[in-house]
Image 1 (cartoon, rainbow, N blue to C red):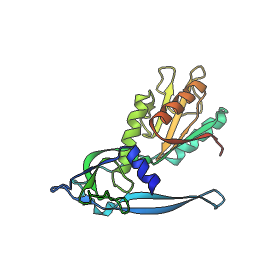
Image 2: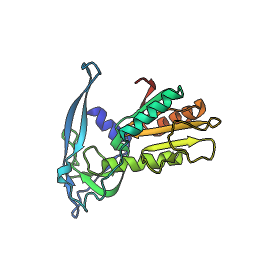
Image 3: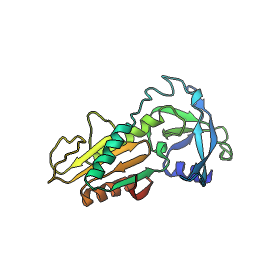
Image 4: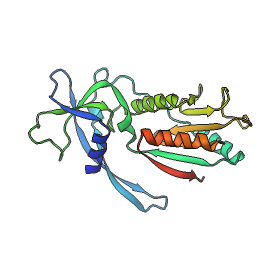
Length: 226
């Protein structure tokens, strides 16, 4: 629980304020989860602070909730393209993913059990960023990372909203089995908190990794084997 609260505070997710008289306050709860290894053994036990989304009211606590997700056929094509061209597939895993999404709506939540601030029991938290459980959390995260990737010079695919490319040449590149041979290239696919990216330029690959790890707290896998 302490680790989760530290991550929330580090991320500047909320601020303690007086309870609003004109806005509902959403409850929160602790949810426990066991993460397993591929062989079924326990990797670690963790806990999340989760908003009680069933208490959210449309038009008040949230508006749009849709967030695009990478299609499996896109990921398969990316893997096949990497295999054909003998590229390594690198992977980044974003820690506490949804805590990075900036909220557009005004949302207030109760202080969590065991972490109620002494002398401030009547106050609540105003969210600046999303909590797990909020209906708009996936959309907020998508908007955040999409904005940052474009800022870093990547180009979003017209037909696949979670697919991005960066190419040295001014080329409107789509994933195909043939690519521009004399051009440095990186292709990025994002599935919620998992980022997979192959490419033929060590410079672009390293730059992407550096940019992402500078912005977000992440776990880096040297390369992914399928």
